Image 1 (cartoon, rainbow over the protein chains, first blue to last red):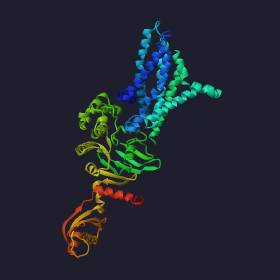
Image 2: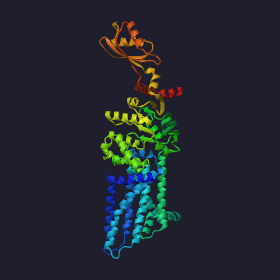
Image 3: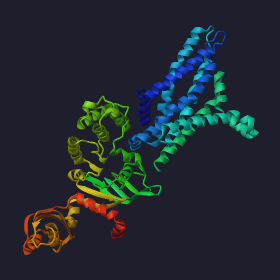
Image 4: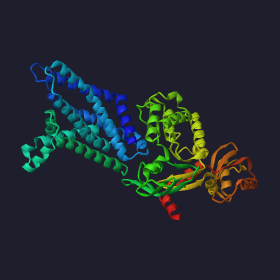
Amino acid sequence: MRAVQVIAVREFASFFRLPVGWVVIALYLLLTGLVFGATVLRPGEAASLRNFFGWANWLLLPIAPAVSMRLFSEETRSGTAEGLMTAPVSDAAVVLGKFVGGGMFLAALLFPTLVYVAVLGGASDPAPDPGPIVAGYLSLLLVSGLYLSIGLLASSLTSNQTLAFIGTLLGLVIVLMVTSTATGWAPAWLADLLAALSIPARVGDFAKGVIDTGNVVFFLAATAWFLVLTYVAVGSRRWR
Amino acid sequence: MIEVRDIAKSFGRVRAVRGVSFDVGRGEVAGLLGANGAGKTTTLRMITGFLPPDAGVIRIVGLDMAQQSVEARRRIGYLPESAPAYSEMLARDYLTYRARLFGLDRRAVRARVGHVMDRCGLGPVARRRIGHLSKGFRQRVGLASALLHDPEVLVLDEPTNGLDPAQIRAARELIKELAQDRTVLISSHILPEIELVCDRVIIMAAGRVRADGRVSELLATSDDLARYYVEIRPKADGRGTAGEAAVELVRAIRGVRSARSKGSHGEWAKVTIDAERGAGDLREPIAVAAGRAGALVRELHADKPSLERLFLRIMETEETPGGGENREERR
């Protein structure tokens, strides 16, 4: 566990040592700020962050791959992987450490958006219902984790960061499109299965303030699945 | 301390390492030599657990690299080729991170980081980003990182790469000092460097070990590497140049494999002579033959067989079509 912590802290800190970390934070805050101003802070609008959470989740689509792309690719490209993989730490600790480090950065990126909650609280009377806000943030964290684990897998498969970014983004867009439109073209049994995998549908439940155990388990299990795949990919790279 | 048994590694159709075996004992400093592409780095990567061999066994301090990889890796300090490190980190932060990664506790981290920074002369660059350091300093950061956990086994891939002559000398002293209570395996293609630092050399070519032993032993069994230089004035006979006459004269001596003129200055010619295997010392026969032919010798000296010549000889054998394979069959 200590190795996980050491690797995670280094990854987290390195985002702040590099321009890419600050650019990603600035971009996300700028975009969510625009969304907040345009869809939440409007006269006559209900005191709810529902629209904000919907958009904030969509905006994670390009942001999470931008965070995950360098986690393994950069190590392979620069040769530092050799130092990491010959240190007395297990492959599992390396994968988990990278995931936790990236996750900590995404959490740090979401943290300043709490300002919107404070602004809404100050501007509206009665105050907004806390339930959907807690559920909304939980959904942002869970979606971040899932996207990050998918991005981590892509990053472990190539030494090219751009390829890792595009691969992750493309994969996510395809999955979102296929699962969201399934009812229109797939046979009933397949459509049901694909609809169950739909991320926006599950995020929608959270935005309503419903924390469904099934949804939480879905995100955690899917994240774990991609982490296991990454672990296998990292192990097999030693065999290449 | 390092046991390598019949390891092999292929990348697609390229057979990078084919059946390499050797041992490096406690306190021994062994040099792994070879031309670029000979399989040195791949061998070191397998020894340090970065790449698994396709076949064969590697043991570090008795620990099987395949079965007890994490424990085995803990015993090794490894400086990879060109010493890659996170360029955005400060030198001291990087070493602290590495020390933690090797499981040192808080107090030990501080003590060891301070110690290796002193030892590798990194004080002036402690607060500088690794990406902004000169190649020499980056190399020293890599070496310091390999020493953090005070490993029993040191594996250094081209440790003097990118260092200036003064730094090379300092690195050599440091390696000698470290070797007193450690096992060290160094790869290099800088031969004089290896001769100065290593007790023993392992020469690789085309993925195989071609020679393994103490430098003095390897050279003692390679007396065909002896070379003589003679400056001679042949008796003028009106035919050809002094060089041609001199070469003709020495070629007739028993034990001379080849001779060639390095040019003539008037009546004097300089000739380089290569001996046959087992020919013994040829200085006397050369002098006697010259006297009999009425020639005058004003300089004659033997060049001791050098590691460089042994190395080049092995490379030549390798390049001869089928040479390497034939040699393999004879072994």
